[in-house]
Amino acid sequence: MLRTFSKIYGLAGMRIGYAVTLHEVASALESVRSPFNTSVLAQVAARAAMEDVDHVRRSREGNSREVAYLEQELARRGARFVPTVANFLLVFTPDLGEETYQSLLHEGVIVRPMGAYGFDRAVRVSVGTRSENERFLAVWDRVVARTQGPVCPTSRVS
Image: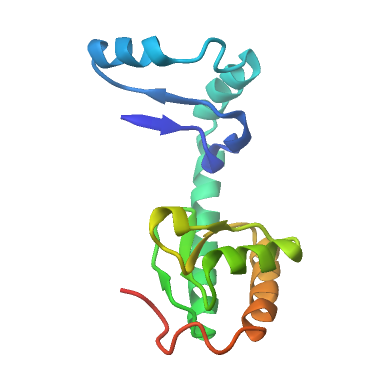
């Protein structure tokens, strides 16, 4: 099992994680690991994060609330997306995902185009705070309005 100390712990930028595995697998991972692949600061932060169960609970609750908000607002707009239990949504785009990504980026909103994963007309949208999600939706509305029509006549992908 491989895990990262990602957004739920507030350590996404620290690039730290862990593995629970067999000795043989750990030895193989160690043989290909870059030297000094993590910092002392990241290790201290990860230890502290593991003890802060209240922060994890609040993060999980906030993410659940904001996922529901984003899904409701995207559905109301007629956008197609894949329902999620994670901290991001796969949202289908009216143009190529790369074009939508560039349009959103031009207005200061960063998403990830998903063409490299076989979804040429989709972007990955990370779930943020309410104000961040409202900003994304406002910019999404402007970007979609500049395209040739609605994203999709149905509201969701099941």
